[in-house]
Length: 153
Image (cartoon, rainbow, N blue to C red; front, side, top):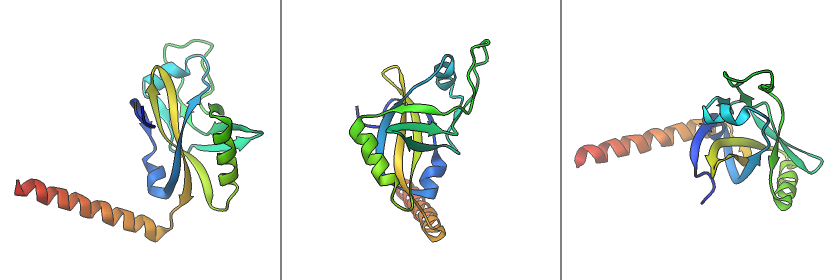
């Protein structure tokens, strides 16, 4: 299965608007207790999240997973730092790339694949304001072209 396929749970549309995505990686998440149940209920927010590489390990920071409603005293902290599971060569590549100026690692999607929660992370370079306007203009033009083609048929 290609990267990013599975039952889509959450998507970070703001990341695609604010960054040029250079490369993507699929990573597993280390979850506690009722976190997977909250994820399956689509109770996750990637908006302010980012990825940090420390001591040869990759961590997902500032991603909010709401506590499970039917949970008990074993519910988790919603904003805790979660470890991501990647191959060693991918971690080394992420670490080397993220040390470059202007490059960051952002979560793009969370989905369920073969029963496991996966996160699609991307190496990203920030867009300038004029790039953002250009992207919006391009999307509007494509939308108008599709509308015209649809009316012609």
